[in-house]
Image 1: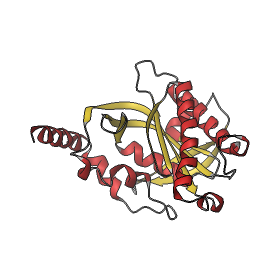
Image 2: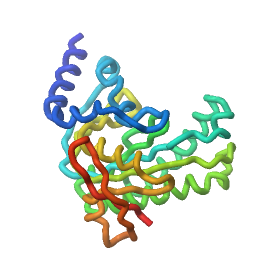
Image 3: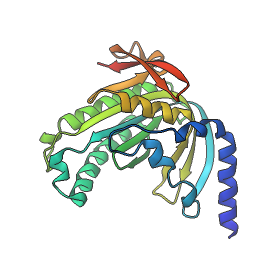
Length: 239
């Protein structure tokens, strides 16, 4: 009982810090037939207080977050059955995990059709945004070459969209869920908007992220995107 009260008190403290950001996380979602990433992260948050152990919530003034989302499951993959489909998607996420290790990035979690990670949590994070984009490029390459990967037996073409944004967020370890992280803040919603509005097979980055890496990669201007139902941001595609 005492532990439960401590966990609830800790969650209340986090909520006070991020109250303004959380107001935007209940907006109506429009992605076709699939739950939004904010639904995935926040839907059962309160009901999971008993099982969760949030450790040392910390606010990062600047990090770069990536969300990769499968827009739709191809019929060939759905025909395999739910268990086999999960195994196939998991095999892709395991390759993504290896990409993160290569670039010293931190995985948030992979849930359903979403894979989330961040860069910039360590003291030496000057090149974290560049590493996030390098990882994103490799993720797209993995998905493109799935038909040539032996462990991926279904040989289907996944439709993936990637969004990247740099901003502040609160992150806490969730030690009862395989050392996954929980993340809160406006940055999550902005990355989600970029991911959902990205063209299939493209990496959409915000103007803020663009400023950090504009001399490192070739880009094209993609347009203006309304986020959080209150302002518009410019965004770009990596080419």
